[in-house]
Image (tube, rainbow, N blue to C red; front, top):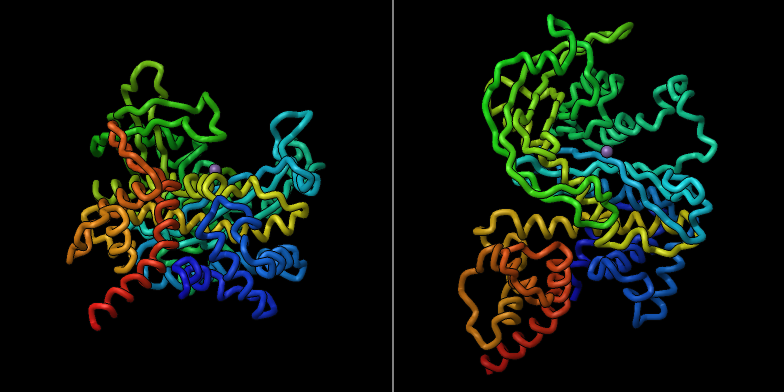
Length: 468
Ligand SMILES: [Mn+2]
């Protein structure tokens, strides 16, 4: 019997063009096993089969397997899901993948300590999330590059053509996605302040792409106010909005100065049409939405978002949905975090950068799957758990956490499934009511997966005994 992980690996990687069907089989076999235990090493997930281990390492070290072909196949799997979805958010951001072992010599500097700069890859990801349901559809693009060490200094940056600048990554991502999808009409790009680049905005408008980009620059705008921030501040308040700010500063790699306590912020929302009038370049027309906090508590950084968008701002509900879109941006940061901590991407010890890239490409999709499970389990908690678990899965789960109890006729809800999976993984509910984390859920889920097979066999025997 094939496991759910194996089926998933087939769905994601069967479209990869690796030049030889046997390589696809190898990739799917390994990815399925790695997906069941995302944190484990390649050695340990191939344990028990010498031939599998040897074949897997040969695959990961095979120079004829282009790491980009692994990614490309996975993007196609996402696009297949895209066709059925309505509005889809394309949430983009860049992260660094750092390494300290021998392979680091092959990789680029990433700043940090001058004497011992960290080295690694830069990775720019485009994550597709369905707007209404917030379902994670998959990866639409991922660009990898290494920063050249003898990169021209900051003062020469202006002289380099736009297409050679690192910031061109935003446009390149759109170009690559455009080549893969039949239409970009249903896509809405979501980017942070880094994407506030005139050339990028102009490119998006020219292609009639939809987007929400957080503004970084106080751009010149037509009208009396003259500049973006002044213009928006002079607009009447459309409505007030209460925002729950989550606590931050608990996870790995977070600078202490970026930490903040949880609080409730009372904000004001303004919006208007603007025309940006840059010197010597053609003007561009955009919508701007400004969220600000007039009275922040002492010592707290006031909440402020200036969003540039193509989406309509005709009424308050239009404006609210633009803010809601931008509020989903954290998912890309979460995704990069799951890739690193949930799949231990930075702990992989391959000695050549291409070998490392092959395994990271596989892990990039496993990280998506971990997030899919978690959002699935958080989403509509009162909905039937059959949205996230198969019938045998929930029945087996029920039998495992309620030994001796009779199975319910109807599937319990998603909230029950999340708690039961967490319990299976040894999680104990806390007094503060904190929900289980994604790694706990994942552990429970993979434990369940390994038990379902045996449980089905046992049920089968029981049924045949009854029949006798
Ligand atoms: Mn960023």
